[in-house]
Every structure is written in structure tokens, then in C-alpha cells.
Figure 1 (cartoon, chains in turn brown, red):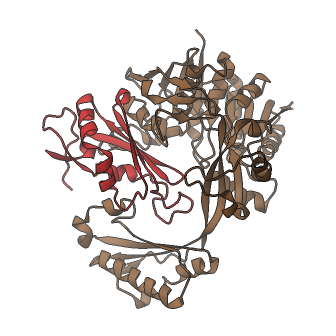
Figure 2 (tube, chains in turn orange, brown):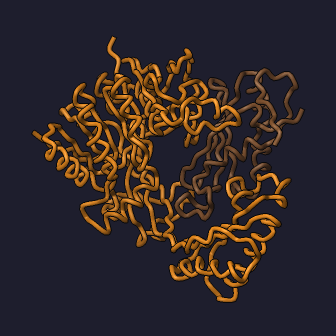
Figure 3 (cartoon, chains in turn red, yellow):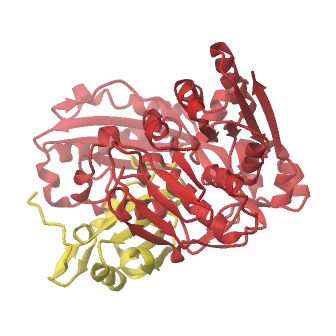
Length: 457
Length: 116
């Protein structure tokens, strides 16, 4: 029986590709599905591109392939990556340059057409309001501040690129799970209206798209996390998939981490809204019929996915400039560490008020007490902390105010409460971005998709 | 007995635009029954009062002994415009695990209470 093994690549821009080596060397994978783009990554890439028009892609793809390709080429492992970001052609040129320098051969496909920043008027003329999906607000309010706008493409162009013989498929924005579904649909010849099989592929892609989170990393628990073996060598997950879409979920032998009923169901529901209608460009998955059978030994059998017809519209996520954040921080030791932070916050707020700065929001957090737990922090030991850090942030439309805010803090070292630490310089203003989700009919987007193939000989 | 959820369940949270989402998982069927009974939209709204500005949504998934919870309007507009340390809402699951519920004394999988 034919099976296809897909291994997880990166889970975000900046993730480690070291564990991918084990998946290729002893995980028996035929494909690596590598997700470089979180919801926000395109904003980072947009800034890169503003500085240098040849940039705008996830640069880590180049050293990743430089390190892994010799190993992958031996057994014909193919890569599907969304590292193209805002500039898949730029990514291809950079990778091709590296491959030529080293004398390696490969067929590299690029998929474009996800960016709709230049097509906003065209889409609106075609009847798409591009109103905010959650609030219904008119996009006109942020139009002049848009930095990027990209539709989530599906798995079909990826499958087509593979059918044309690509060894490496570079995309821009696609649904993360499409990086896995594309190779599976291509290999098994799944029809694009075989909703249950597509739903199975979507499930596996979703379980693979966050690298180590699918194999025991970030296992949200008390006590249990400490029993995950060998974090330092945590292996990334692998799906061994059968034609009917059922699969064995596992990880390479001799690696750390854990694949179990517990660890993979945490990933299944991660960043999912309605679990009975998990919408992707290719199919809508109902997670309520899935079966996970834990065989032990880092092996879980997955079956039972059910799918419904794909949506008529694709999701677009745009990002827009939304003001500036100013940040200041100061730490205090016992005694009265928390009280001294609180007093410092009062002083800073008074100084901001005296200056008449236009501040839209102020956020006060006490690191060591409530900066991660917020109002759910247990106040029992608040007044006996060994040490505590005040972190204050403001939102403002004025970049100078955001810069000035951080500069209010160092003065406290000599003229404020005693026993300070962490005077490590002033944090500059940080640009804030709003996220704008919207919908557009799929045919309007898909008419712009282009697949091109370059053979490096 | 009163227990905090961390003794009977595990959880992971993430972000999508202005929503924080949490998966809450029972260790076994008996504990799942406790979660179904105790973790309601009303209790969640109270636990996250002042944090989630919008509606609380909840779906039980019997097949994986889990509850899917979505807190709308919880992330100050989204991770990239949030002023918070935890802009990505990764700790919302930890906040949930501190919620106190009523559970029977004889649950098979009870994570032991440790002295602080």
C-alpha cells in the first residue's frame, strides 16, 4: 500500500530547522512542509521590502535549504515552503543563486497571486466591499495606511507545481495546512471535491504546521510538561498518510518530545474557531468526527475526518499602520518591590499628564506578578515579592511621544524609589499594526494565480 | 471538592486577530464530565471579566474529551497592536487553568497539589 510521509519544517519565521535533519535522515519523509508566515510576518517582510525591493521573503529559507538540500536530494525529498512571503520571485532568485554557486540541480516553482494590495480598487469594483469580517467596518478608514493585503490560497496550485516536476515549491500566503494538503492531493490524485479526503489532509497539515507544537513542545499543563523527554532534541512531527487520508502521526526515532493523544489534540484545537467548521480554501473540516488512537511509542493513528464543500470566498488578511507604542521599564528589589513599581507608575503617569501628551491607551504590568496572568494572578504574595519589574506601554499616533515615553524612565534611578535594577537603555518607539480580515469571491483571486518553474542545471 | 482546572485538565491557547482561543482537555472521560458540567459560558465570562470584551463561545468535542473556547475581543485589537507583554495570548490557557471548579474526590487522574 502506498503511503506518503510528510514532515514538519519550520513553524514560524525564525524557527529552527535543526530538527528537520532527523526527519530526513531517519524519518523516511518524502516531503517537508515548512510554514514561515504567521499572521504578522508579512508586516515584517513589508518593512524589509521597503528598504530593499529584492527582499520581502523569509530569508531563513536560504540557509535552511543550503544545509538540508544535499541530504534531501539523496533520497528525493521535496520542500513546500511559504517562505516566498511578499516576494516569492525574490526568494527563488536567492535560492537559485545559492544552488548555482554550489553546483546543485533542482526545479524550483513559485506560486504568486496571493497579494491583492494593488487590486483593492479592482476587487471593490467587482462588488467585494472588503469590509472587516468581524466588525463590518469599511476598509476606506484604513485604506491609505495599508501595508500588505494577501489572500490565503489553497493547495491546488501547490499540487499543480508538483505535477509539473517541482522539487521545491515556493509560495507566498497560502493556508498553512495547504503546504501538506498540496503534496497529498498530488500524490494520491485526490479529487478537489472529495471533501472527506481533503479534510483528512487539512487535519494533518494543521497538526504539522506548528513544528514542535505537534510533538510535545509548549504542552500546556501543570506537571505534565516536565515529563516531556529531551526538549533539547525535540523531533518535529511526521504524518505517514494512506490513500484514504487516514494516517499514522509520529516523529523520527531517537528524538525528544512526545507524540500522544494528549500532545496532538492540543495542536488540533490550536488557533481554531468553530471546530465543526474549520474553514480552509479547499474544504471545511468538522473535527467532531476525528478519531485519535494512541498506540504508544509516539504513534497515534488518525482517521475519521469529515469535510464539507469549500467556501465560495477566500479570506484576505491585510495589515495597516495603527500608531506607535512607547515602552518603559524599571525593576525594584525587596523590600516593597511591588509598591515601588506601583509608585513609579503613578509618577510616570503624572509626568505624561503634565506634558499634555496625546496618549490613547496606557498599559501597566508588573513583571514577576501579573504581566502574563493579568487579573487572574494570585495576589497572595504580591506584597512579599523578592523583586518586581514595572513595564508600562502607551499607544499614541505621535511617534515622538512614543520615543519620549521611554526616556522618562532612567531619571527614576536617581530620583525615585530605592533599589533599582534593569537600567539597560531606552526602548525606541515601535510601530503598531492593525489586522484587517476580509473576504473576496475565490474566482476573483484565483484568476491572478501564476505558477512558474525554473530548472537549475 | 474545589479544585483548580490544572489538577484535572491541560490546555493551550493562541490568537487569531482580536480573538484568544483555548483548547481545554480532560485526562479521561470521568474528568470530561466534570468539565462539561462546570465550565460553562457564564463561568468563563466571569473568570475572564475585564479581559474578554466580546462574547464567549464554547464547543464541546466528545471525541477528544475537549472543550473549545473562544474569547472575542480579548487581545486589544490583535497581537500587532497590543500593548501587553502577552500580546499573543499564549498564557490565556494558564489563566483558564487557575479557574476553580467543583469535582468529585475520587477522580482517577488528579495532578498532585504541590506546596508553593
